[in-house]
Length: 68
Image (cartoon, rainbow, N blue to C red; front, side):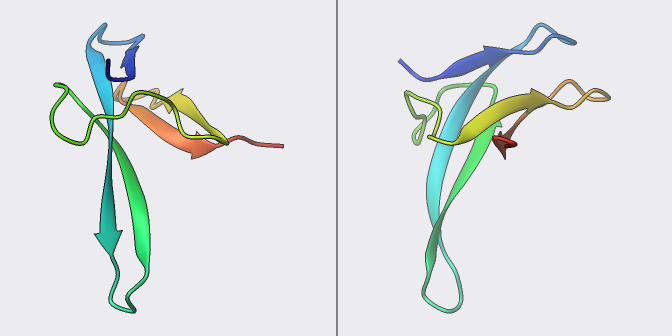
């Protein structure tokens, strides 16, 4: 089952996705994003060292590193 979060503002459910992106220098990075439907690339768990925050104005969920 894909990891999901419900927006406090809009009460809409968002699903966490990940994909690999290759940069010009050849390095690969993982991009994380939330979508309204669980599609290909949906992941089951929150990445280690990350937390969910919600944009106060739009209500969209975002990932950020855990602050120490």
